[in-house]
Image 1: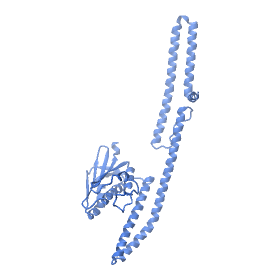
Image 2: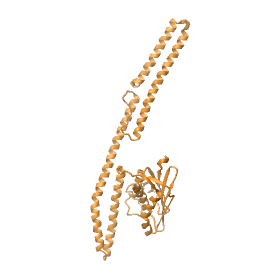
Image 3: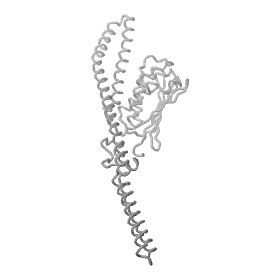
Image 4: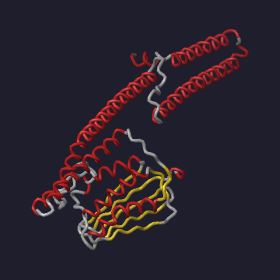
Length: 349
């Protein structure tokens, strides 16, 4: 009984049942009248009344389901608008009935998702602002310490022990400055407050800029830095951020290779993607660590690198994903590591 009442609460459904009941009553009355007063043609009259009843019922059902289809089409368009980014899109729920009850629940879910999104965005902005403020507060003492350390290095030209201490101090100050900058960059990407200035860039030019950035270090450490790829491959990206992402991967490769090893950057264009790989012949990544290398501040118990803070790879991943790309890592102990970046070609989607 409760189910029937809920079902009949909808105006269109109620009208369908009322119309059907009315048509059946009319058919019954017509059939009875034909049987009583139209005996010579009673059968024909009953058949005619039955045909009219069928037509009326089919017409009523057609109008009912056409109206239901219109309601569902409007609901689908509102859902698609919400998925496209219109957070104000809502399903029509001004009527009563089970269908509109479902629409009301969907609207409530959309409101909850909007509230969570606003809270998450506020938290991201707060984190970005907090880290930005901290970084700015740290810049002044870091700059002062660098000046003091430089003066100490000058005064310690003839004092080897103090000179060594000052050099080590400079390295730690550089590490601290790098940490602050990387934290700020990740916070900005997370908060979405740093718009990407995308343009079509030749990949060969981008990778040549990365090679120039690390060529001196590679030569000093006795390592080979190679490039391989076609000159006509292009990528729609933010040049500065893409150089940061690939540069972090190359830096990571140089950190985990020895003299005589090779770091190779290669790029290719496929039907719908541009692929960039950074491969090295270094020590490789332990299988236990491979699933966690993109986590922030993750430190391997097998790593011999005591200088890193675990932000280079997470920052590269954040930048790649901000470009709607993907990044994967494959590695074998003692054989090296390969990072693969893939970006969709918008014009060929």
